[in-house]
Figure (cartoon, rainbow, N blue to C red):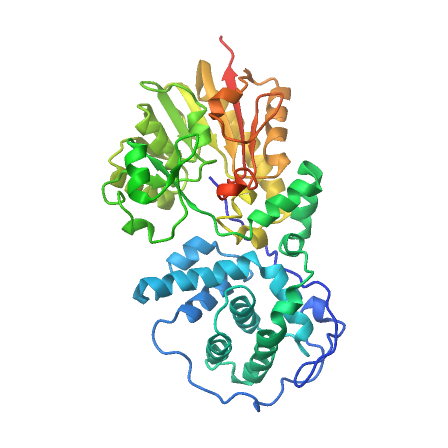
Length: 480
């Protein structure tokens, strides 16, 4: 489970200089701070004003979503995109294009700004205009969109309230259409597209080489991973998927999830291969009472139910609990669903096992959620660390003597993983380590510490699309 923060971490431009022509000029001091560099926008001499696109439009929807995701509130991409009121009116192909536009901007935001901003004589005051530039640049630099379409349709977006900016958009995008690919040469893509605080944190934890490998995986659209209730070979064949060592099906071809074979039958659910590990590492749970803390959206709950456990799914958010109910309903799986805060809830009796998928910074899921790059800050990590420690203490209280606790976070930050377990053990909590063995990982190439703790990284299994970054530890409550 991850928590999407609202701290403003807008990307800052880096470097850039050179000769400019026409409406363009050298970058001037003050641009880094987002201030105009003097003068007024150029007169509309390059582009003839036109009406904005009528009806549902993939580029306009992408622009609306970017404004919310990169705005002061930093709304989560998936929720914002799926909730756009015009999205359902688009054809399937256009919906996919709108999504690709936004995710490409988010994955390549550092490179895009590094390339585009030096071309500006003045920086637009409005975020929406800046995002128009980013959308146009993404098409020209990374998506091989025909230049006439990328330029004309981006400029057309400005017809709705930003006609004075149309000449600037036209000039910059035409420059990118002819010279943009050359401007990308020599750029350090992994570094430019990673915020400084994250890069430094990962170098400290994993070293420079691994940090580069992690950041490189964030530039690639990940495959679709699925967990199946039964008959993995049958569904792998039906879906054109490979079976990973742990049983996850990995599908590289695209397509709408709800249109794939087996969706309506409830044969499978979407779940990254790394996200499937925590439930597997509880061991044999058939017939045992298991508590799933932070259960929504339900992937781990579904695993526990499919393995034959008697599951209580604890979820604090009523809205997310409704989503959990719908997911389990489609899968025809049953669990007791409790809407409550784990820090306040009183369990009627202790459990044989507890799975705590704690709220975290979600920095391990950037390959699937690139908006996390620009939404999180060190302050978010510090706040979440406190919550994780309290939840760990609560999880221990829910265990019967001899019971097993698996703690997991989809974060690459060491403060949220091994440091939390070390702090819990140092507090004299009534638990001991229950080391995870290499054989339990079934050949999945991930890191296993001397203490028996699992670390998955985006660059693990890179040849087939990588993994989300998880930390997983297993503890056992001491007998009374």
